[in-house]
Image 1: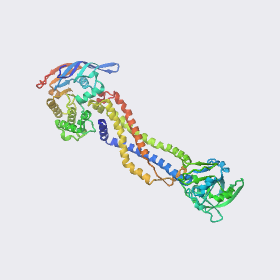
Image 2: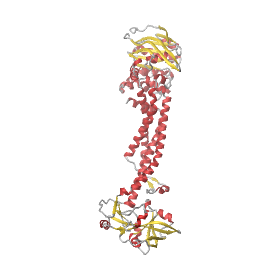
Image 3: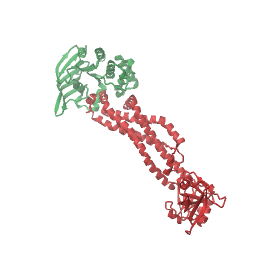
Image 4: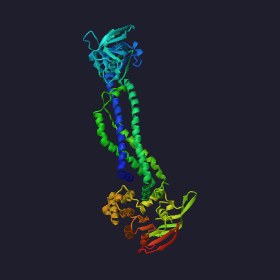
Length: 390
Length: 239
């Protein structure tokens, strides 16, 4: 307790040197929590957006369906089993038919996925209402990324080509009913949404679907032969892996920052050992043991971490709270990273994150403070009083 | 050893390695100091004064021979026990004062009491009394940088005396002070020696200090060349 009191007194007595170290270290605290908070916020926001716009309460997939293998689409369709049909009728699920096709626009042909969706569905947030047929024209819905890559705008005519269930090529003109602005690239890039019944008719696949999306929060999982259930959690596993990969990259920032802060502490400790040898001798002459002197110098260094946590809290809490409530504007460039979090990114902080970061910084500070002080163990009081090392 | 002897050295030898050779700093030094003495180790630089003080203060150990301080054999003390001996029974005064620069005068004087684990109220009382002894009660909140040389050394004396040690070791305490401050400091220490019965052992080659000593031990090349009593010890403190 005495050593702690003395260390605290020394630390505050050192004035500007202490406050500079504390400032750098507090910056590490805040930035580590900020970066981690944004990574978690990115995770949460992307998960929520993808869940709302695509996965909802999970999906039943036709047994042949593999979203990463377009060749499976030839066979990945079938009539809905009665149990799923019942869910669709009850409004607890909605079927989607997926097939390969091409769009011809701007003088070039581009491969796309044609996705048939019920215009009246409310299971996921796709604005499928724009696909309600009010004329003989074929309405299609595309996302803003798709519109940009094809040069299409709302109201434009575009030629769509596809193969029906028998492999016969067919083509038709369609009008872009709406260009939707979505934060979810996986319902936008390379995709054209059509009315489900029109696509079924075009492909000669009546009553068929590739997957069926369940309403959010719907708990029942009826048996459906030939169809496999994928929970929202399973469907988000790729997204989690992506976030994890991005998080690993981002952690380099705070490792560098932490390293710089620790270098400042280490440097201060080394300087202290050389500049304060006479003081160490005096402390020993006054009755401190070498162990107590080591404790004192280690605690002085380690208390930088405690002060930094307090100082960091003073300016960090309002700043972090702001980033959680108001978010930060995301540059357009970030859209190309494949994340779905809109124009603003909101940080998400948990007590665990703050506690873990605090403990990490305190532990690293304590170790960095202790390492140089081990030399004191060999120091002779008489040499120290003369300002020499033994 | 007689009960009144608080320091005794027998055939004390101290050698320092100097490359392939050894420097003989102390050679067969046998001395004893009684409680309440005001004695000085006198001699030129390199005569072994500071080395002897360091051994008596348990800051160093002899190469051979024995030093018994307050009943403890310095050569056999563990680091921990030596620290406890210094903390509880010995006060140090240094040539360069060695005040802790980030502490106030009050905190500097309080330091040994913190190590002794005294309560805050006891500490406050003792520190203010010690600062009063040296006439610096009104400078309690000043830091060493704000004090003059004489004031700094008086704070160091208060720090050495605050725990009422049996023994105070002062290494060239006036070397960095002018004549007037030296005189004041010596008067303060003489006064405390008489009032509290504390034993003072100085190392010095300053004539001003020598004039105040009651016993002068001359060291030359690590050996005792002379041991003279300059003034009689006060009644009841005869060695």
